[in-house]
Structures are given as C-alpha cells and as structure tokens.
Image (tube, rainbow, N blue to C red; front, top):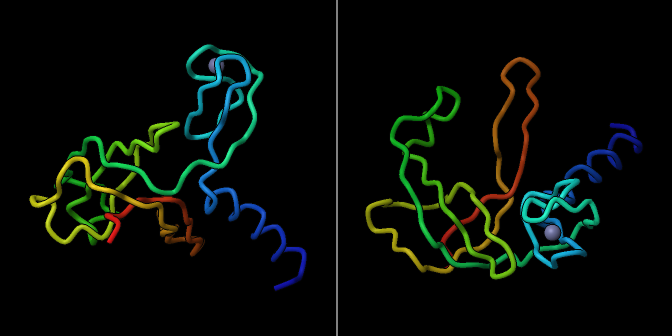
Length: 133
Ligand SMILES: [Zn+2]
C-alpha cells in the first residue's frame, strides 16, 4: 500500500471514528450526521463538531427481519441515543439478549463494520453504540 493511499484511508476513517456531527452557529443546536444545512433552522452557517461518545439509550427497536447481507447479525437492535447535545439513531451492538435491554442505560460509541461489499471486498466501517460496561 502506498503512503498516499494510507493517508487517504486515514482521512476518511477519522471523521467516522471521532463521531463528528454538525453545529449550527445561528440556532446553536448540534446534530448528527453532519450536514451542509442545519436540520432545525435551515441555516448553512454550520461547522463540524465532535460529539460526546457516551450517551443514554432513549428508545430502541429490535429487527428480526434484516437484509440478506446482515443475517449473521440478526436480530439487529436500532436505538435512539441521547448524547445530550444531539440525538443519534444507530445500531446497538454487543447486546446478548435484546429482551433484557433497558431504556436509559448508558451506551458508548464504538467503531464497527457497517457492511462488506462482496464483489469489491471493501469493508466499510462506521460508528455504532454498545451498552457501556
Ligand atoms: Zn440551526
């Protein structure tokens, strides 16, 4: 692997790992994922901001029917995570028994495989959350 491709890979990986969101300079609200315009007031006066990596599970749902590429991970837990300054919808991983999961538990961001492209062999990583020990 050339040095250039390593740098490029790192550059694309870091924003996902650091859990970057957006912050609006006009209304002061933070949001996730980052966007060119504020989802609350429409302002384009937004900048990237690092979000907290620990939050609380506000609500969740368990999906027993998932797409073919993710059947090895079924059932999949999708949660609404309240980070205080912003809310994030994300997969909740490392849940041994979805039935015993409780709202309000502390969860932390982790860096995990999102999907793998079978033809290209490209593995895409991103942020998910898991119950904090
Ligand atoms: Zn705004």
